[in-house]
Image (spheres, rainbow, N blue to C red):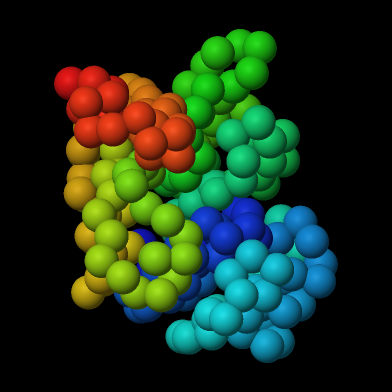
Length: 214
């Protein structure tokens, strides 16, 4: 059973996921590189820099010290894709072997073109790798609006446990074992979303929009 969750990344997405885990009844600690962000989350239960107007209720712990987070039953890494390797390397030195670690960033690493799960496996080889992806926006998740995502791991039992640990009335994770499919789908979705925005902004019409998704 996953009773405690550590979240690495004090941005909008990391804070929203930490709030989601707290709402699901988990003991949560958020790691933020920015000390001011960590202090605000811990003392005032808000992250005005990244989630303005959102009260972090139920409240959860926050720290700027990585060692205070990595002992959790499961970790979520919600840092930008291009900083994943450095954060995972630092966490990998401290984490308990076998700990499920969920990559919550979409995309490929610049230079290597490696998927995020591949980067994590290289940077922290002792952990059990999982990925989270889906059409989720941090502000919607933080506000408690209905959101569905997929959590994938090659170990089906791990995917099931993670999905159960984060599930709540408005947040529905679906467990899967197709890690590659979930990652590529998430990365491609972002590209299509940008293209769809260009079509809408340029008023190119429904035919152009349909061509993107056909």
